[in-house]
Image (tube, rainbow, N blue to C red; front, side, top):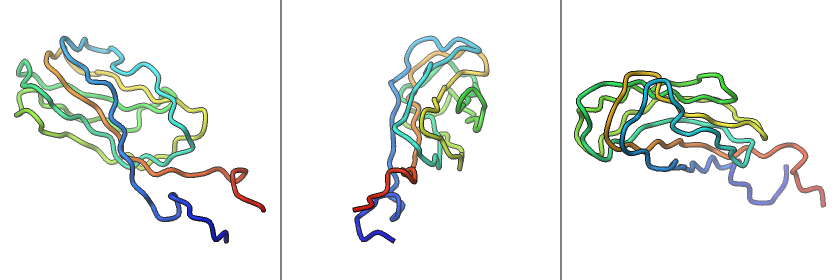
Length: 130
């Protein structure tokens, strides 16, 4: 075992906020087209934060890794601002993989911001050998 400090060894949890999505969220449309994290990472949680009261509908926000859905959050758009809907993901995202977030439900209006909590996992070939 190396005596160097390694964030992944201590399970340092990081949060990434995606760009704010406001206005009309079309049904079956990508909210985040492709996001390439500096990986590999282990994603713990995905969530949607409501930033403004919306049009009184409920929609499904899907979190995908390489096009495969790994979590779906039910975003109740008539909830109070700053309410959070989240789901546990517990999925590894390899280096070079991409993340897509899409609206799988009905048309919704308002402002939301998606986020993910993750832990960095370093590849074996990144280890210090000196």
